[in-house]
Length: 124
Image (cartoon, rainbow, N blue to C red; front, side):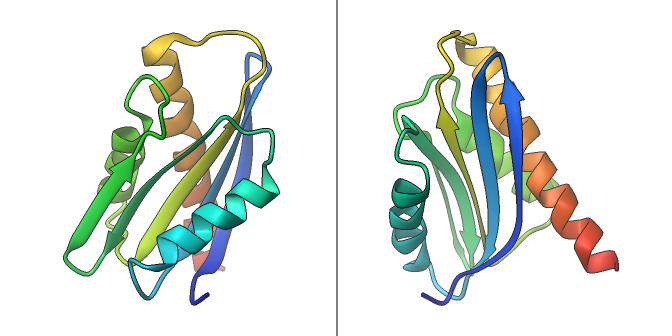
């Protein structure tokens, strides 16, 4: 796998856990391998949502989650001018429904946290 994890954070929201990872990638093909990695890392996660920008390709997936979290993650990446990256967030449901707006907000906040951590590390 040519992907390199450059930042990771965890966000807790109403007992749900959101694990956000930012990866630098060489190819859009790296997304499938990252998804497999998250399936193994977070076996209890119901959803692995992501946004990717690599070359001329951009994509996002909600993985069945409400609230369009893939689009929220894509907006984070666009706002920070990230290219050749995948922002993947895995959610472990905590028993309290957040609703579509709450889900989108939590994924956005987790994604922002990973990107902010990446930018902090780059500045060192």
